[in-house]
Length: 248
Length: 374
Image (cartoon, rainbow over all chains, first blue to last red):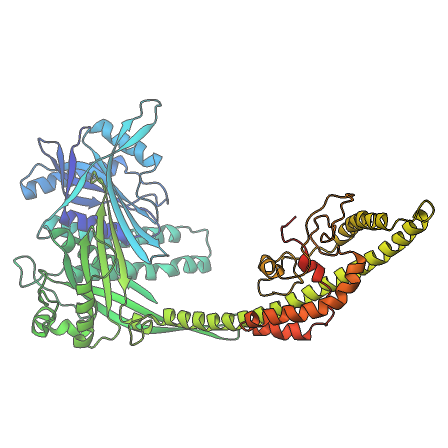
């Protein structure tokens, strides 16, 4: 196929994982920013976390507006890093679900490949637990789509993916990472506003529906603080320095 | 028990692990608390549940392996302090990331864990193992994680290092085995008693059958004599019919006695009650009568031949001989017993049952029947 392999930088991998692990109830998604080299290896340097406009459980779709906004962001990153950056793929999560792409996923991927042959798809499967062995599992896979020979349906083909060490957390990734709690908060805010805008509901119902919001707010807010405190820096290494949190 | 780790901490561990070309390890910081849930339901007034909650708030990665222990697995407290600094009091466990390995604690990890437990003063120190595996074409990867509490398992082990559960199972098994042995001995005793009773019953049945036969034979003889007295007086032919009739009688007996099917005799039963006994065959050599199979209806004057068709049960002696035999049997029996005494000494139970048996011992004949089986 068009793509030989995918090299995912470790700090981008960190953001993807953060994003995937942030929500257990529904799928999250984002876009991958990077470049493709002459040997047709896709290098993913960063990711953009997308807000889901439609929080349906089994569907993950990127609107054209989001794609356009992502391209703009990619240009900004290209300027910042001095490298040719563009949107090279997309990722989404499968909480409590197997890592393999569904038919919808394969079709969506095929659609993206129509505009860009080198477009890749990543899936992160998390919150998988084996009760018998008390083992938890997180899986990730990379795929593209091809047209099946016999039918008009699309099939998944596997693309090798390697997480490439990146000693420091790039600025871009840090921004994306911190963006996550903000986005989660915004989503809750939107949901709250939507409920409040329903004027036909009586005040009791509004209060009831809205009373969950503070809890929903504080969670991402707390997570945001946690995120900052977790991205710590070690003094010994020529990498990052330590930030002590009041909680420890 | 419930253990939790935030997604940020988890992905941070994954990040450091991905950056390591070798294994990666570090410490887990957080808190352990006991939660008590008090539930009231319709079925129970109150139900208290204790749940130990382990919360991993953060991690302290080690920059390289062997940073706080040496190759022998000996932990150096100074190095430990240098890594942890004032976070030492928040340590609730440690973790290790490995690729393509089993999801078990290695021996070195066990040793280190024990020492950390003592040095850090955390009795319930946990160990979080991350293992990484990939598909052959590297398109799909899995990171598995499992939390160990090796110190807890000391409940399972007693001072010998054998699991308490297993020791308990062995004890139960041993006790059971002893019980089974004791019961087996009792059962064996009662079985022997049952056997001898059964043999007695069979004997008595045969006696009854024989006596019946004798009666019938007498009647027939009398009838035959009455009917023969008309033509001529010949003593000799009298014997012939007897022989032939005994043949018939034998047949009759055989038919009747086929109801009385003896079970195969026990090996310990040396008495001649068991005519099928191959052991007794050798002893029968010394007995008076040696039966030989004779065709039905043959008029051969075979004095030594009891005129028996082959029968499984020995109720086939001529009545006269039998009448004599009853008395003879006693003495024969006593001789027999004398012969048998030495061999019976090993079977004390049997001799007891022999003594308790009725003295009527009709089976001199049954002793004499051939031992080949039908």
